[in-house]
Length: 352
Image 1 (spheres, one colour):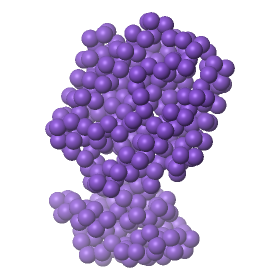
Image 2 (cartoon, rainbow, N blue to C red):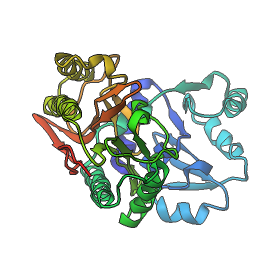
Image 3 (tube, rainbow, N blue to C red):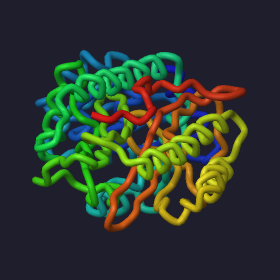
Image 4 (cartoon, one colour):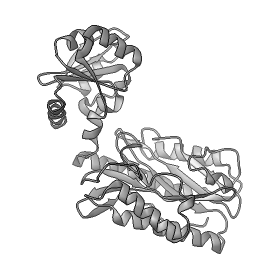
């Protein structure tokens, strides 16, 4: 944690700020280790690290963040923070705070308050070795859930039942909670990249897309696999093979130094080779960490360049209205000359 504070203070110097108020739950956890971030704020200066929370969380904060100076406030939080911020000088304020709090602080401090974006988020994109190990564990849980799920899938089961199985299995395997509502969509419903599981029953000949993840020690996993129910036509097998080729090609291009926009372009070019790029309706991937979707984005508009220690997903998909869709997603750790795939679930077409 001390190294993270040092890096944050270096960022404050570059921004010519005397301090920063941290409001986002993930950033509070990243800097302090405090898990009650929905009811807390941090004030970091060159000299102090202050954690503000109410009496419900003071004992928890003292255990989880012993190196921080704990300031107890009465709900709603803000008055003690304002008093401490008043003597800091020029203070940055995360732009995720409520408009009400921003107005209150601005009335107190005037032009000394400066809205800032992504100051801590830019520190979070490069993972430390301990973070990478947790992300590997989180990915392993997802792969174990997928393997277990295969024995339960069959025609006649509803999408919603499959999604509920995923939630239960994630908890049983050690996840704290799911990192997002699981996607389990079949047949024509799989043409929706973020379709919601419904009462549709799986049928022989369906493609079933499974996109899910769970939190492990605060860090998210994210994986997608698509399986065939009952049977798979040659046309379906050919389509799957083409998408798998594009996805694997994308994984092979991941390395430190490549621009995210270039990685996205290469994957789309691979799909264009099969005349499938027109059915790929989203970015190639995204960052993964304390949030299931975080920087860097891997899309045509991204300005990020991959660096060693980043963790991203590679997840091209093909979505054909009226027919269905296929998506394959791996999470990978960026290395100097390649990447480490941490999603261990098999990617070859599985027919159940």
